[in-house]
Image (cartoon, rainbow, N blue to C red; front, side):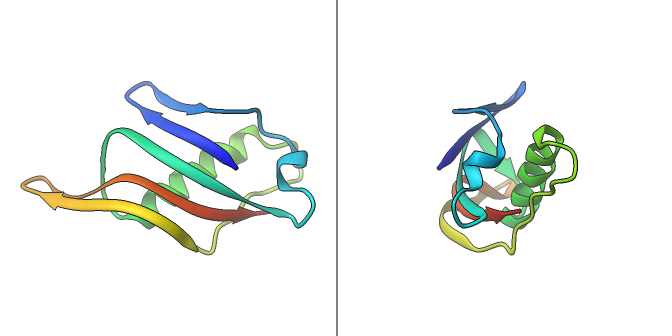
Length: 92
């Protein structure tokens, strides 16, 4: 499982991105923990994470998601809807 911490400075990953992360089935689970709440829809955060991972992937490979959210911690306040953490599946 890939764990990504979303911080004010960007994303911190618990491991490097390589094709091995997706073995043997071509997919993996990503857990995102937000240091400060992410204001927006969970799918938008998932897309942003995929874009970041794609920037780290070897040439010719693209990470995608079908927004299969396995677990999430969300809420809403005066600022709107937010995400504290979520776990979702990605594939190549």
